[in-house]
Image 1 (cartoon, rainbow, N blue to C red):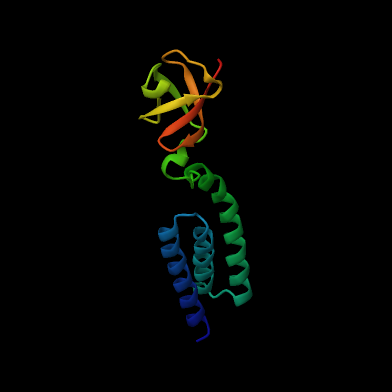
Image 2 (image 1 turned 30 degrees about the vertical axis):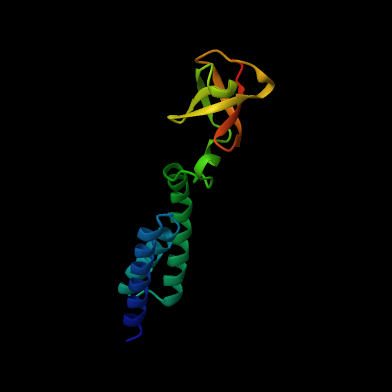
Length: 146
């Protein structure tokens, strides 16, 4: 009678961890779900509770180390900046050397902006620039020397 409840505990734990993995997509719960499946299989073959726990921990640790490189390769870091802040440090190019108020026009990430050049220079059209600051509706940029 003892074997049946632990079997269902392992199955429910594995199911909960699989569902949690599908919701979070972090590759953190999946190794523990695999460990719970291994423990449930061991339980169905009549293994002792200590062996089940050893299998759960062992398979979980091995799967965790095996999946970490895959998880790092698949997941991309999230840029927490939003709005215009995401442009800080971004590269672009000059598309017009003269804009209203003595500014230049630049394209950064498919968006066109009025920009002021640090140091007051006038880079040629097509010159690469880097965004250093945002001041209202204009960017402050510096020319990237190649």
